[in-house]
Length: 290
Image (cartoon, rainbow, N blue to C red; front, side, top):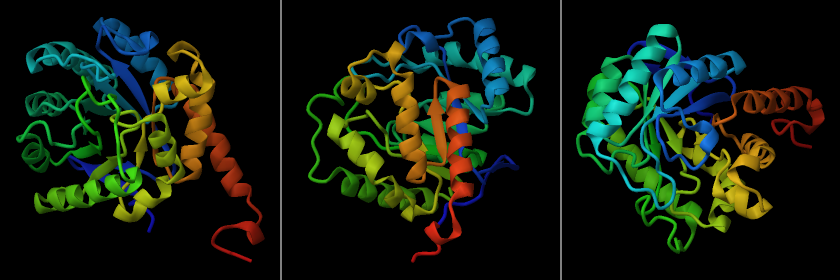
């Protein structure tokens, strides 16, 4: 089945009739991609304005680096990083869709009160027992991501018998948990680079269509990640071309949201994807097999 065409947050409807772009705004000093760091509120506002002009549908604000090997910061520090930026962006762009990237329920609570529409949690509510009850109470959209381990150790020889099967099992259980709390407006993120080897990551791209069995939108975060750097022998700074290629592969397999550092290029990727989809001859269309 196709995922829902709309998600609801605090009474607003997020339309998903075509793939969306989520632009990354990092309020961190140590994000793996130096070009995405925005430590000063005014810099973040400038960055947000450019992303929206380039075609971002959602802005995702984060104050915690979760790159492999990262040391996690306390929620008080995260609050001091993200809330001023969130407030500034909401005041400047009152109609923008804003997401907060956090696994702390208190950070999420304050962010929602300051105007966040989406909570993007790398632990899918597993790190903080108060997160899912908060989502249920506030009626905001929830991004639930799969990961294995924690940022400090997740890339130390990750292993699976079958990575896709394990992720499907995880989200089957997670969906039941969310629905038991009345949470139906959620997005699935398979967690590229979070406790996955190079082969695991590309197996996930190849099997991305299978994740639509949960009937929820699928978000992919491939932007400039190690899976691109290692395969192509590039750095984060030179991984944009590989990111675009990976994003196109994900779109072809049903990705609904691209989470990226480079909004304009992702928007162009989606535009080309949509044009090709509309141009498929009738006799070749998947819904009309020979």
